[in-house]
Length: 219
Length: 227
Image (cartoon, rainbow over all chains, first blue to last red; front, top):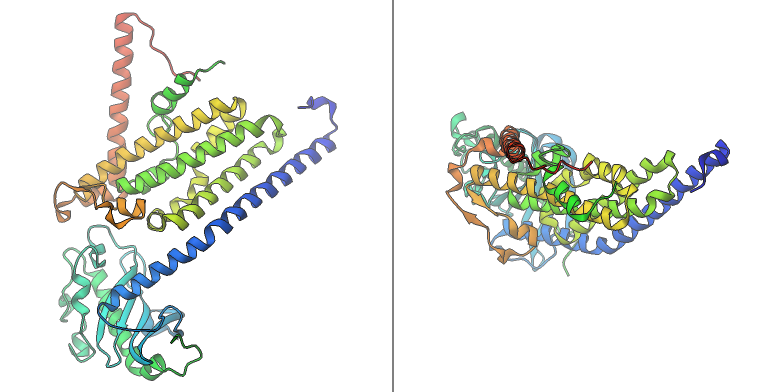
């Protein structure tokens, strides 16, 4: 390294700037190389995760299209829980709709909004509900996860008339759905969000299920 | 200042342990140590970043003008962390999700920058590598101890979710001491992490002062942490 006194301040500054510039270029090159290596893997695993989520909530329902690409986006801040566009996956067998999967949001979570995946059959019955993202308290509110408790299955097979719409509440609020031990806020938010999703489905059934939409994932 | 490898190892693991003596990087330490699997994931990621950034700091340190040395080290650390994060989200997506924001936040773990700037940049490559390994292992061990304690008390299990870490579903779900519902929630929340770390610090201090007393009593000189 050159002795500090031998260099003019301008030269020193220029050398420092050049060093920093070279280091930046090298760092960016490294990161983008690794990014290119990892990107196909990341996309594949994300796709596999999404598909596992969809097939998990669909259970025994048979279908032959690709629900990951056969999607539409809808908006309804009041009934879907978010002002942002909501993704709806359409599930079909031999071209006929067998389910719509709606990614709704339950804004009333204890810590933050809860992300839900609601599967509804063409007659308006729930095939199932899964929590896809939440920040509820570990050990209390996280019993809404399917792998932690069976609570989320209280919705299987239910519909808007079963129970009547005014009974779509947790028991504490005079409804038909059990709350969780030690956690009422979380189930209350989810029951409300699922009910709203069913109301939305009933109002927009044709739009959600129609085959002649812009994209069609049937092979 | 001549250092031998055994000194470097002893510093990282015990005398200058980042978690229990230097108290560096407490934010990820306390936030992520809710289970053994999470602790192992973050510990190994931090270890990889530490070794990489120490090695680059040792190689590049002598060539860097003083004015931009810190800036270059921050850049190196950020690039290493980003690479680790990308690799993890490609190959261990489950673990990547459960570590969440704390993975990119390794950049801000002062332990990494401190080792690169205050140690690795003035040492030969072998010493810098050994120091990264020792400090990383010291951090990893504290993380693991906290993670094991909190998981055992809070969930009643040990090593649950290791299948996420290994990316295979046949790796089993760990060992279970008692059913989940009897777990003490406090251990999983941030206060529990502070309580447990406090207990570990107290044990560490009691142990090192007992060693010092024993050293004085026998008249032998106890090796002070080389600095």
